[in-house]
Image (cartoon, rainbow over all chains, first blue to last red; front, side, top):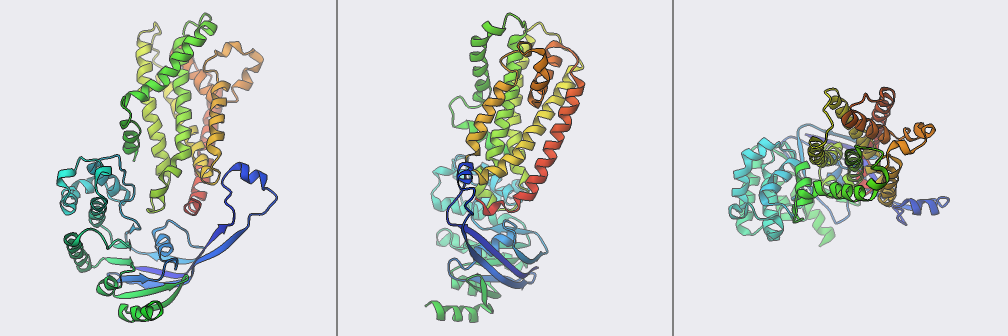
Length: 240
Length: 242
């Protein structure tokens, strides 16, 4: 279960970037000018256990910032966040992948970064390899993989991570048609097991198919919250 | 993470892991050839003293430099997953410690072929000095890693500091060439205390200077805890600074 109450987040975007001692020294008496950019304004919502929440909105509306705050990477300026259960963020697939290492090493690396223990990765290793269909290339360096294969491997590791809550940021469109089908099955499985999912996507069909509720973010504010069908129709009226 | 870093660092060079040992060893060879004429006659253990000094100062330089880059170089992971950020620093320290370990093996070989006897009490003391050094490296690393995100020229400054430290510490020259009255000044530098006393116990077989060791211990603990506090306070907001 997740409860988000009145969360706001403002970023300071400086007009000039001062990154060195030299720059700080030479402009000591000139105050740093910056613009404020409010990425989130008083966002509140609640997700119950087993619920799938879709988040839609145009680019720059604060979707990713919201997920990053939930993942604990950014701190909110104000507001409260309550999370019950283990949370795994997939803000990007293949976090920490290293191109110079073999697929085998990368499975361990990525798995551990996503919060699995070494033993868990060992147990799930065969499943991951099987799902990604990379048995033949286990000891190939990742840089020699096609980009499609890399993403497939990343996705296969990600779905093996046991958790209660998943944050998914645009990770649905992965691989060829056959792989897509396998992913859909995996999703159905997650749905059955009562996992809680936050799904950020521009793919309205996917949102309609999987989510119980949808939040529409617009310039950092919740414009509408409700059933996916209604929200997407409203959203479509503005943007199509 | 540690294993990955280590593997990555050396697997692309042809000589592989040998470089870990070779780097300080080559420095030792050069310095030995140049300076043994100058200082070698006075000190029969000059070779061992020099090697040990280089190994320890190398640990300091490598450890702090890796610490400096530890957050920056992992930016892609830090921005995507939330894990205790200190791990990044411990992993850097572990990496430097692995190199230290291999270097000490080389030192052990040299030491076996020298007439210096082993004193039982010296090993625990030497271990203590290694721990002190690690605490100092880590304490500095806590500050450097955070500050580097904000001040990108800190890396150049730190290089200068590192070479300054190298010459301010009696590594190539023996302590005896400094007039007695300035010794207190030299020992304000905790690295000088650590290196000098490591040599005393390990090579000379003498008792270490317990008072200065105690002061260094306090200093190292203070640096480490202040660093940890600073790091914990600042790291929460660091994701926005990249």
